[in-house]
Length: 117
Image (tube, rainbow, N blue to C red; front, side, top):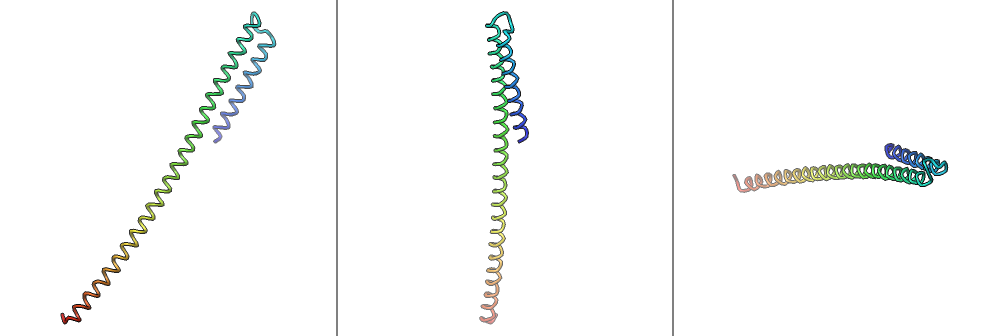
């Protein structure tokens, strides 16, 4: 998250520097004539915009990556919870089956005793 803030600060600093340079070039008439100064200013503005676009893309990529990591962690937590639930249900079913088996054995032994065996 701090990387995003750093990128935004860099973006703002880059735009600020480009704006100051463009303004200075336009006002001072830097170059042979006004057309050169205007071209320089436009070039600086385009460079600043390209840099801003690149930084914005980097920020978006980091946001997307963070969201994906959060989703992956949430999915993993859901899977772990489902596994625990399934394991608890399996243990409960096994316990019930053992109890029914024990009851059936007792009933069978009782039936044999009643039959005289």
